[in-house]
Amino acid sequence: MRQLIAIEFVTLDGVVQAPGGPDEDTSGGFAHGGWIRPYADAVQSAVIRRQMSLPFDLLLGRRTFEIWAPYWPRHADVWPEVQAATKYVASNTLASHAWGPSVFLSGDVAARVAALKRQPGPDLHVYGSANLLQTLLAHDLVDAFWLRVHPITLGRGKRLFDGGAIPAAFRVTESQVTSTGVVLLSYERAGELPAGRR
Image (cartoon, rainbow, N blue to C red; front, side, top):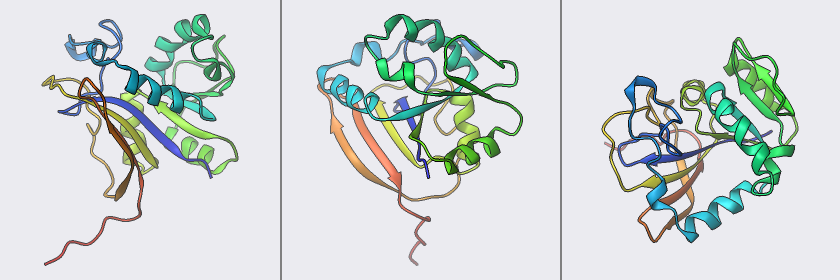
């Protein structure tokens, strides 16, 4: 069974919206796009490069796919693995795209993703895709988180757990602090939520 891994840049107050650039996602009047840029360093780059080199298929929301589709084919030398990966895109409006291989998931996305997880193949990596992520969390489909927690608060914006999550336990599989104060954390599922003590 494939694992579904949510890979997110996140602020201390849980914002995941538009980390890469000012025009990435301005929905809801968000004006802080590009907030990760001052925090890049060699430590974070090495971890990201290692994670990007693992076998994977992509699972993306429509907005993230539309941001990536014009960019990554022009930068294939930076991330050749993304060109070969199957891109599964949650969308009720897109049905095909030149950037492939692509498969478009419409209708009951949670059921479609659950079926994908049962198929043989590489793990499914979800980058960004804040709206899709809420659906995945609500249906208990996320097996692991690879988080890059930045030492800032933004006050508003789409959040990692905007819609809540199913109670579950996770364990830390990797942690590291970069020279710029970003905490790199990897969590994987560790079963059911432990019962509290009286």
